[in-house]
Image (tube, rainbow, N blue to C red; front, side):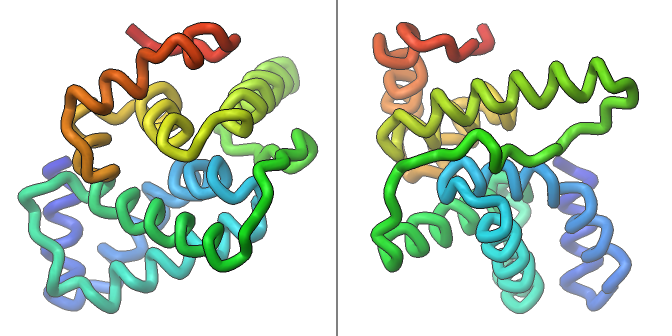
Length: 177
């Protein structure tokens, strides 16, 4: 968190190298998060690119009172919702569209990661958008309840309820404890 805030302070001062570091650090997780909404890797990449541009253009408005990734994921979530509203997209998910977002080195690790990712996206695809967002941020992106509440503009108890519903428990989706 502090490293990201330091990088954003440098970005605000005009350091393009710091901006590039932030993009490289958060790009893959940001794309995976956007893809969990729009179910299209290319669209997710476009949305994330637009969001990073917004971060740069509006860099003076960033305040380090929240973690940078909370700030970024809030922008991504809002842009994804806007995209879905404008396209009236269906909730259909093709498991063929699962991105390869890992740093695994062996073919077995890559295959295991891909299968796990497919399962996660299939389960998320069946959920309503609030459940999908909360569960993705909690179980996949490893955000705290507090950060998720900030991103979704909800209370922490509401987020805990979204992350622990019987619907989520009844799926094959593994929720971290």
